[in-house]
Length: 205
Image 1 (cartoon, rainbow, N blue to C red):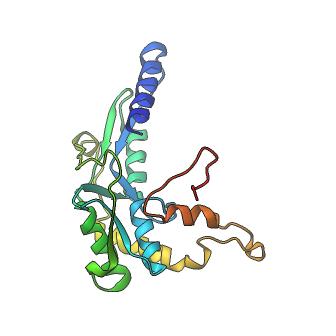
Image 2: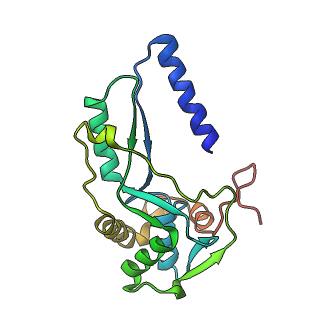
């Protein structure tokens, strides 16, 4: 995954250097918000709790990640597109950095009204699970961008969206217009502790 992202950047930069293609590259911390497919950490935990399941923590849960609300990312793109310099690379960072255990407890607090170990289960760690990484977003902030949505506010808005659309996640009933958001099988696979698809895009077993 990381190698493919690095390769994509090199491909873009090669076109900029060889053919003068006007490019700008952005690198971002973990994005969250409404309408995010539940294979990602925050919507996965929200929907698992809503279904009476526990937050599945890979390994110790002590690895740390930075999170940024999608509205702040959209604002960063707007700034970069209008004020960024051709050929530059801008980092979209966040002041909100937590361990996965801390994130699970905060989600449990918003969804259940309390954070408790009873809502958490440990599962085998995934391969190559980095301890953490940070981005220096000073170059972007110099253009006038700043993070506006802090984690408590963004998390509450995100939980509110998933709870208000719970009846549509997924929506396979043709009487309601078919798949309003995602297919039932896709959601069921995404909510498993580990994502595992075979060559045909199906979960084994």
